[in-house]
Every structure is written in structure tokens, then in C-alpha cells.
Length: 123
Image (cartoon, rainbow, N blue to C red; front, side, top):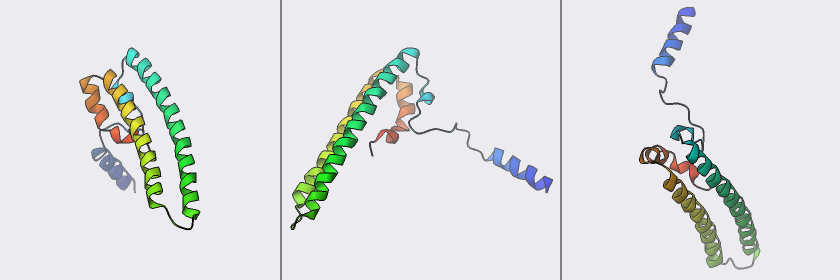
């Protein structure tokens, strides 16, 4: 039993992933300078406020969509417009964030950030 346990332990070390575990929206892997950290803190604070506003906006539009659904005739164009407004708002926030982050990162940091860019899409 001990031999099996040792074997499994050694096997797990051999096939363990060498990369550090990455937490969603964690930027520690970028190794930001003190100045970049201050700038990033400001960028992310603004981003959080925009996302909060987006969620409230989206909630209002979903309520509007629900009301449209209760009508006798479903207005597809209005529903399409609502979905488009939601998508455009999220896209604008994402682009603003990426522009700001892009401006403060070095090329090497951009290459690291690029691997996790999907994390910053608004859901």
C-alpha cells in the first residue's frame, strides 16, 4: 500500500503542470511596476463602476424585453434592438478597458495578458 502511495505521489509530480495556477482576472503574472499598479488600480476601479452600470442597464432592457414578450404579437425587431443595445454597451466597456490596459503595458506584458484576454469579456 505504501509503495502504491509513493508511486502515485511521484507520478503526480512528473505529470504536474509546471505553470502556476491562475486565478480569474488576476494580474500578478504581469509583474507590474509600482506606477503600473497605481494606473491599473484606477483603470479597474473605473471598469467595475462601468460593469455595475452595464448590469443595471441590462436589467432594465431585459424587463423591457419581458414586457414585449407579453404582448399579443411578438415584436422581433424591438427584441433584436434590445439585444443589440446590450451587446454594444458591453463591447464599448471591454474596448475602453483594453485600450487603457494596452497603453500601460510593455510588449512582454501584453503578450502575457493576451493569453487571458477572454477573462475580461463582459458576460
